[in-house]
Image 1 (tube, one colour):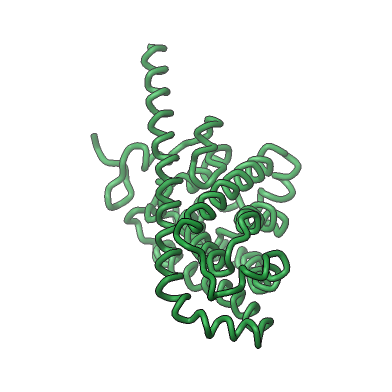
Image 2 (image 1 turned 180 degrees about the vertical axis):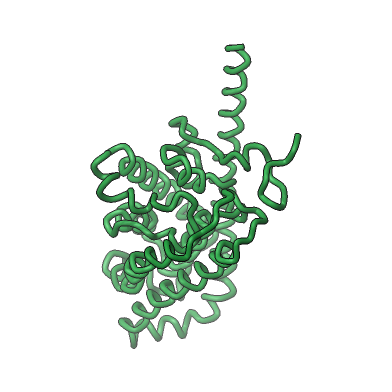
Length: 291
């Protein structure tokens, strides 16, 4: 019996590795493709106008970019929250109903943290080189691929270990991270329902640090920020339209598993766990399929 359990455990670990590395690679490919398309067909045609705008109205341009990020979070967040607000059961990960009173109590903190997006462009202007704001010199696909790969690795390392630290350190968990975990079955908008210290250290700094390290173009970082927000809203949505097989939702349910984004470091540390509905296979209602 012990041998059977050991074989089963090894099989799960190898399967987990495939899912984790597959998630990382698919994220890299999708990110590069989306970046390349948007920069080629949206940003490049407006490069001249954008360069003129940032030269003549730098403050307004940078502030406007932050306002757009703020608006994107709320529009996308509300859209992804609709299934939970309407009590849709299809593809739901946890069969729990969301309480409007709890959401109402959480929204002031969410609003406070989301306001931090507004001055983000102004901050970036101080830490990125001047060429990062030249829209006439957008990065090539090769450069994008290398930069995004580095950004994703740096982001995963910083997020995983800062996030795990907030759990392992009991004092930090009680004073800081516990607030986020009051939602054991989250919805999209509470993705940034967190203590401001946690929001800066674990949510904002990891992707920010990677982009600064590779001296990313402002367009690259702006698109990466939007994609990152869409991803974190999706994995907090409570539904299986996220790309992590419900991994982060399971973190909220079980607390001490799935500290990372892609699952690679969780696989290495033995903390990679999928929710029961994903492990058993789920049908269109989100319920486990019968064998």
